[in-house]
Image (cartoon, rainbow, N blue to C red; front, side, top):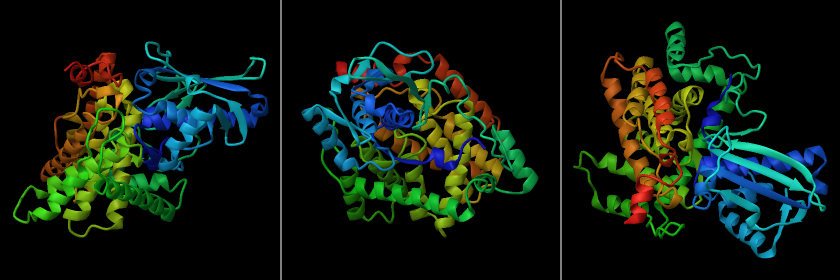
Length: 456
């Protein structure tokens, strides 16, 4: 088994899984490597270079802050978003950083260098960490790559397949959608059942269930915070939070006779999550931060507008969505810096559509069809964040994609599962489209809306 559903859904902080969560993980890995090698006490200074997309949008995506936090020993799933900012400001003011919280060195934010026009060969999101002793001699040097969704590879792993078998045998291994469907046909299991059987190789069924319900609870807390917080998002664009105001209007307006009221709530749920993400709050990477609002919004739709919704539906939804997410990691990418936003919002829309299709009674072929529809109509989507911030068009894009996922699921379940374009072909097309896409449309903030809005 290469990937778990818990690799696709991870608790972290905003605004970006590849530009915030990834650099924090990389910095933490580098410092723990120093400690395990015995080199930490000899370190007098540390320098980090951010290349490619990280260098181009590092400030807007919080990459510099993330590196500082990681060097201090913080990890994305446990860092306190409230104290993170003040902690970094203290480092800036005092000029001192405690590596892993235990070894103090002189440090300036200028020691994190943004190489805006350079990239490392393996991936657009490259980082180089260097540690020096008090005579300027290198204690250690390491390259890391943030390859999307918070996944980090070091220089030894770069160039290998992202998913490497670890020797753990699973009952139903799959790398393509067709292989996944073959397992469901042979066993009679739904997609979620295949995924659960594979998960149980490493965890008990109860542990899988509890872990997924914890993910769901974090999603719910994020929605609640987003719906109850007002003000302006950080970063300089002066983007107003809208979720709180929209919630008040929906609750005051009744809307019992409005056939589309459910979709307005879905929009609200997605806006709430992505405004929290843009503010650096705690979110679930699903499968990225830039697309973190889609799966929670569709799950909240299921909670509020489907009959007989309960915890088992949550588990089945997330297992199914996770199975589809594995196909994207195996055969394409979920990195906006690598394939554009089709790899983030497109994959999340596909995953959410599949999860919903299963919980509303879709057979495996209909689930696969829902995933394909969700992706097909996001093909070619660029990643062009205005000002390098995960705000415009990212926040609204999640709301639109959440509605699209619901449409895809319902369309597929109304059919019989037969369709012309297999999911595998759509994923291949997404990978090829990403390869053909110019770099300025891949999370560099140098093309598309990012260019034209600033010019206006």
